[in-house]
Each structure stands twice: as C-alpha cells, then as structure tokens.
Length: 303
Image (tube, rainbow, N blue to C red; front, side, top):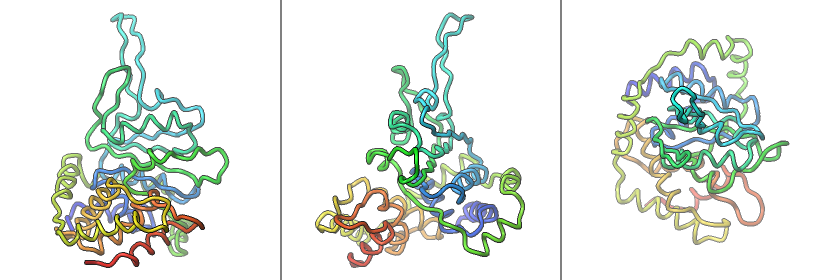
C-alpha cells in the first residue's frame, strides 16, 4: 500500500475505534471520485467519520445541517446588492468546499436536496444563469437517518444514484465501545489530527486509481453480475450501466488500498454491498441489502 494511504488509515483508525472496514470503504469512495451516503441511527459515528477524513486528508471542510426549512440558496450561495459598486455581488455558499458533510440530508425537503444534484454529478453549480466550477477534489459525504424516523423525506432514486456507495456504521463491538467510554473526547482527538495528504497528492492518487488494471475476464464478471440482476425476477429492476461503472471504479480503489495494481474478483465482491445497497431492491418479500449482495455473489460464478 502507498505509505501515505497507510498513514491516512492508521490515523483514522486511532480516532474511530472498531470501524476499519467503514474507513476503507469511505477512502475507496473518495479515491474513485465518488460520493458517500452513510445511513444509520443517530450517535453511531457518521459525522465523526466525515470530520476525521477531512482533517486527515487536509481538505477544506464545510458542514451543512439539513433541516426542513433549508433552502437551495443556503447551500449554493446568493447574490447580494453592493451599494458601493452598485452591482450584485455573489456570496458563495458552503458547497464551494473540497469536502461537504450533508448532515441528516433526508430531513430537508426534496427541493433543498435537489441543490446537490448538479454539484455531485458535474462538479459545478449553475446559479442565476452562471455556471461556477467547484474545487478539486470535491467529495460529498451525506448522512441520513433511517426512513422510519419522524421528520424524514426519502431521497429520490435520481439522487440516491449520485452516491457511489452507501454504507452503515453499526454499533461498536464491546472492546471499541469500552475505548470510547473510557477514552478522550472524540472532539479533542479530531482537533489534534494532522493532515497526512495534501490536495495535489490526493488528486495524484485518484489518477492512479483510474490506472489500476482491469482484465477482460474481470469485465466479464462485472457484466455477468449486471446481466443477472436484469434477467432474474428476484429484483424489481436490474443494475444500470452507471452502477457497473461505479462497481469498477470502487473495485479499482479497493485494489489500490490493498497494494495491488490490478483488480481481482475478491475486490468486486468486497465492494459490491456498498454499490448495490441503494440501487437494488428485492421483488416480493423484503430482504436486507447485505443479504441481496450475498445472494448476488453466490448466484454469479467467477469466470
């Protein structure tokens, strides 16, 4: 593994106890130039993970607390008339940062949620007829509470699909929870974190991720997975070509984190649950997203 990546992971694990897999998933999502959705109950470390990554990667960070009265202008920015120059002056919103934490994104109305769509897909925003580029790298981590909780607005499929991966934090294991209860306040730990990368190094790693080799046989495997979801009646609809691209990009990133310059089938299988959890739905009776991913892995043979 690249030493810088190793330092990033080690520092993140020192601040977020007992979540090595979630840290690597988040890092893989960033290296693949995607965006991450974290869905779980309040208080399990979703926001902490975003803050730790921002400090560790040395990224300009902005947090937006999504509420029912949030407006698109609160995210994108607004033009205000300047009396001295007799002109309207644009005041950029928090979206103009390298890492955005959209906290509790499903507590805002669909209108406010839609303000993220162009930014996440095109890395630019159009405000009052003017298209403005966003910083590079640009990474959105959104957290959301389970949809059964009071005061939530479900994310539409079009916005869910903008997220490369969706993961859950889960409860900590007993040893990690004991460390949390008996250790230093997480906010103090985060304040002491030092950047292990700069923006140029992160962009170089993202470029290196896109260069990780994918064999023809591996492409056959990915296509077989996509085809299976489209041809079987077990799912309401099959995975899209964009889902296939997301699976390949995330698998490349996972291989790089694992210290390899080529993707193997195990990379695809490891990353698959995060890719399909918000894109694939079972037909008929409800099945957990992790069960769906396991079924898919078992159903499709490796070429």
